[in-house]
Length: 479
Image (cartoon, rainbow, N blue to C red; front, side, top):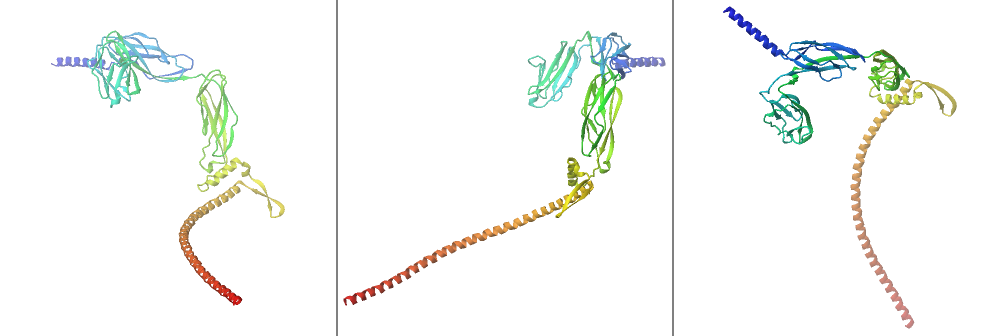
């Protein structure tokens, strides 16, 4: 019983080992991956790469995918379990960090898959498996996950006039059989959304002969650092000393020239307070370039003014590092409060545009009718005091003006009330005038009647008087 148990244990152990090897086998593997290479620009460099076939079958025509960085000769056959050391040429003349695929071909009869492949299609991302390979005889179920009447999808071979599949929104197809080995380049598009298309490739491989299966490929991780041969540069600066207000910027220019025999690569300029019109550029031997730069001081308070700062321009690349000191003197300035801001702004503007006005000067003044003159000296601080007095007066005057405006508004309101009252009174007076005019008319008419009556009476008495006199004359004449 013990021997039988030991034998059974050993059989199970070796079976597990064999199965484990089959499960863990992963095609072509790379021994000591993550390659770091330093090479000199323009020269060839080689390194040795070890690869191994972990599968129970052979690989043929093992090679690298197309790239601009490394290459090695194609391996006609890599036997099962074989480890091969390969001489790899580094041809890159620029830095590279990334992955490069190593692949081979196998001679096999794989047969079709028992289960169909599901490929989901969304409006945002297109097919879930865009570049995909299957074996002839395999099937695919296409599923449109988009929702809405305007999101039907067509699958159409590039160059074809009609789609080979039309899938409604939210729908799916019956399993589609692909039984002919070919490469199908197709477009997934939404007809109602003509600007949303996805170009994909479906490769249907033979189920026999030499084929490549991506799951057996190896991925090489490599970092190439290209070193450039040293050259020499020279620079010429028009100026290296500047005097500035803290709020100013200064623009200037310098030239840089490659006086060596090799190319100057990735010339990098750096500094504090200083920005450059160009950076990270190349210069061929004998080539020169003018570089503009701007000095923009960063000053936070008055204690940082009235000082000279040294700012270093550093130039690096495949040459001896160049350093140039730029000296910047920041004139004295007072950082004022908000209430004093108007004074400071006016003073800065005046001094910037008329510097002679802010320097100590001699002025002349006449007193009354005296023809004598006398000299007065004043300093910038004294001028500032005058500015402060002037603007304090303006601020006080602004307050008075505001009060006057408010008082004027009040007076206007009162005048408006008086005017309204006056208008009402004027209306009343007009009514009285109208009544008086009416009354005057009545009195004048009455006076006219009385006058007419009186005149009639007087006229009657005159007539009667002259009549009696006339009779007396007649009587006396003929009496």
